[in-house]
Length: 116
Image: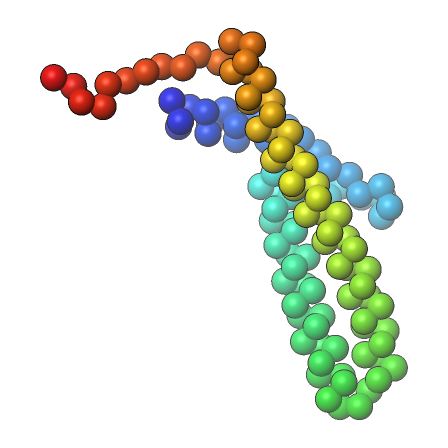
């Protein structure tokens, strides 16, 4: 039953599309997995950007470091929005599944763990 529920859950997630209206682009199509991959990429990019900022500070290139800090601030806002979308997406999917159980749209199959 759990395996069937996980399969059904995965199928439902593939049909969603997220749009970043501020940047006028599709963030991810295909559901939660694509959104999580995009979020992981953004977080990796953020770490790289921090490394580059530290490098420029060490070399005394403060003007470039400040410009990169501004870019980092924008990326952090974008990452926060994506994290909120992932959280909302998970919450909505769990609510949808729970409501299907409540309305009887999903049947539960019981199995005996100790067959005689």
